[in-house]
Length: 114
Image (tube, rainbow, N blue to C red):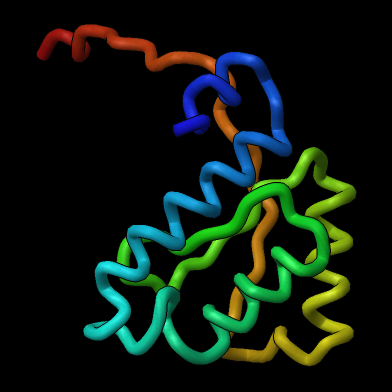
């Protein structure tokens, strides 16, 4: 398993490859129930297309329908969205968003006094 070492080493290509592998293994466990490794329809197509278009890693949250791609920059994310629109993957059934990771740990505070 290379997921955590790649994360520690900030090796995005290796992290993405390992993440995609974990997603494929996990999705295979549920394939019979959900109709494929990823939720069938737009989610499965978009996840496959984003991988083909160069995303470092792809997957699906739980049972879907949320798919995701890991890319190195907001510009790369915008290129994936443009590719989805050009390929006709994007339709009113899909909402595409670009989000950033929270690159710091959690902060624990006491609730305000009542």
